[in-house]
Amino acid sequence: MKHSSTLFLKIAVFIIGTPVLALCIFCLPGIAARGAAAHPETAFLQYPFLISAYITVTPFFVALYQTLKFLSYIDQNKAFSELSVRALKYIKYCVMVISILIVVGMISGVILIAGKGEDITGFISLGLMPIFASMVIAVFAAVLQRLLKDAIDIKLDNDLMI
Image (cartoon, rainbow, N blue to C red):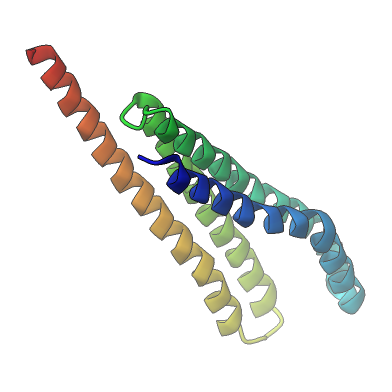
């Protein structure tokens, strides 16, 4: 496989990760402060919001790192190795953790919003989009992991026959 295709994917991973990192460092504290100033009755949730946002973004960056490792294994012709399977397994677990954390955040938000008698449909629909995207990525990683594991097993069987 040409290194240009994996280089393109590595650049895409950096392009995905850089704005998220900038958002976490520069924008998220301001958003939380503005929300606390605009709604003093929920100002006590400013720091729990920030902590939960940073906890949620941590598996995202772990998954991006594992993706870079997986692409490096492809460059080194180690695509059909246990290292690649392990990287895909970590990506799958990270994405599942992200989905679970979003669901927990949605449940707590629904409880908070519904307690005030507000409409929660917009909140729920916004929360379902990243959950759906995360689950698609998790299923794709699981399928790719299984195919890679099967290919490694077939390769080992063929090596033992010769």
